[in-house]
Image 1 (cartoon, protein in one colour):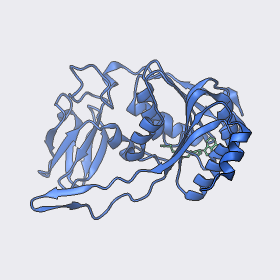
Image 2 (cartoon, helix red, strand yellow):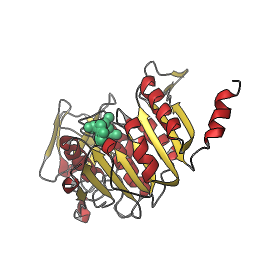
Image 3 (cartoon, rainbow, N blue to C red):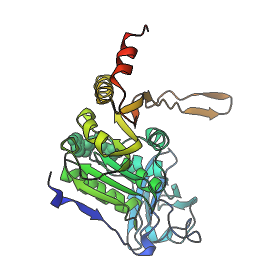
Length: 300
Ligand SMILES: C[S@@+](CC[C@H](N)C(=O)[O-])C[C@H]1O[C@@H](n2cnc3c(N)ncnc32)[C@H](O)[C@@H]1O
């Protein structure tokens, strides 16, 4: 792995630009500033993510309006285009941003991001290793959860992915310096040690298991997000064979939206039925071989 290509992100954007995801000072938090991102919602519920710049104009089939009309106004305001169409304007939440940000690879969906944080036990101050970075949706989520005292080292084998993630992180969390983006194949190993958590979203996590066993702190959480059962099975076999992982669990998250209107209250016709499976495991003292033999011989 070329360690020389590791690049630390240390954005120090002017404070006027801070706050894409509500991180700026409380007084200005809910007022649109020049440089903020705004999420515009039209009457059909279509979303537009717009980077506000005083000199620019928003154009769409709904009409146009100058960005300066929104700058200085509070979130939740409604702007009217030159065609008389109203657009609701809000600052994007983390879930909205990750769904609408530019992406090169498939992102982890908000329903899974939330579970990664809780079941991966990502806490303020945690030292986390993540791979692959992809478009950075999971990286942004981890950065916000570990906070200023924590750190995320995020690896990807592709420089174009890192570029995309770098841009998305700079947009979502300007001013955050708690991430290091690294070009590298984590199946070949990584230099970080004594890690609190390892979070993987890549196709063959079983190759990472031996390195995770070595580099996780005692009790550390290993978490992997995978789209298919065959991958999940292979990962589970690798975790068991390693013997230093215990409490291995796999689950999926089904989120069914409901439509609530008038006398019709029912599940929506469409839902994101499948994204992936989350597998977690804890780094422990290796299981004694005798205990494994007993477990294998015990009746089901
Ligand atoms: C599905 S994408 C990750 C998306 C990301 N979690 C997000 O939310 O935006 C998978 C990424 O893993 C990277 N990758 C695959 N194998 C890898 C490896 N062995 N080491 C590091 N990155 C890897 C790919 O280049 C790709 O960018």
